Amino acid sequence: MLKVMNEKELKQFIDKLNNDYKVAAPVKKQQGKQEILEYDYIEEFEEIHLEEQPDKSPKEFFLPQNEVLDPEAIAKSNPEENKTIIFGVRSCDIEALRVFDDVFLDDTYVDPYYEKRRDNTIIIGYSCPHREPTCFCDQLGISPHENKLADLYLYKFDDKYWIKSINEDSEKLIKDLADGDEDLFDEKLKNKKDNFGESDFKFNMETPIPEEKAFNAPIWDDIAEKCLGCGVCTYYCPTCFCFNFFFDEDDKENQKYRSWDSCMFSLFTKHASGHNPRETQGQRWRQRLMHKFSYHPQNYGGLSCVGCGRCVKKCPVTLDIREALKSTEEYLKDEGGAVVED
Image (cartoon, rainbow, N blue to C red; front, side, top):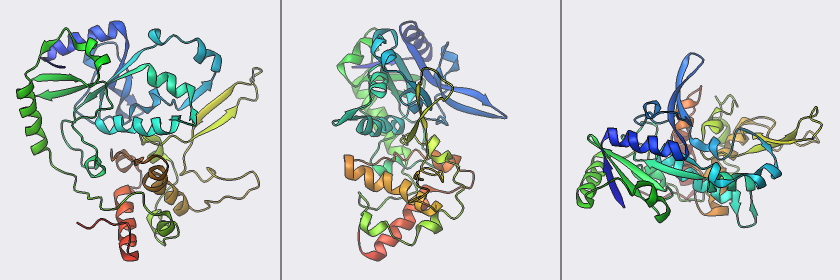
């Protein structure tokens, strides 16, 4: 189902959704002296900003940075009262949900907190208006234009907004809108794709990256030489999901909590004995890159990097994962393996 709207009609559409659901979208916020763009619940259409890549992905709607683990609250929650629509999500951030689904909806264990939020959320994607200089999603097989993991997808061509349903359940949300011309839409989308351009970065490695070849490579300390271990890359990453459990010692209910952790932190793998199997920042950087391009592909069949480029943008010392991948590629090429020749 394909529909078309002008901006006034889009506003009316969002206002109507906001009456029936909780709607979150990219909104501008003041963070200290900086203005940032992140997903939050909106009260009115004018708060939404679609033309820039949000500083954060919407992963906190599925895995909050800090949360109370309360099985009774999960069991009592009413899905119809808690339905959320996340509007304007880029393809890379939608693809990141596949990574979360791999981990939290695994056949051997389902995380009930994640499952509840995932089931109660409707995703309306937004076709990227332009390529970010730091983006390399196309090199990882991800289209910046659309993603079938969304429920609905929004496109902007000139002064019109086109919206397409990806599955039958989402058709009811747009059934009252004006029908769009399929042929005209296909022509406009093709023209956009033809003129969008490719990433400057080229990813030429086969995946999974072979652990036995890369694990002891003498490249990791050089890659991580200027890394501060601050964890910014992992906190802004839409696919990083590591977390800690802890209890509040002053809580008489002995409530259990979960909060994000980072493989970039020096204490991340430190054992109670005092032994730390990843003592150096180079070893920790190896873990980050290998998890995304070796371990996750081995376990689940897909990468756990979506090429959004946020880690490149946000790193305070401009440590670039694309350069780390190139160093890995060059090493593997010298060793005679795991590189796809141009």
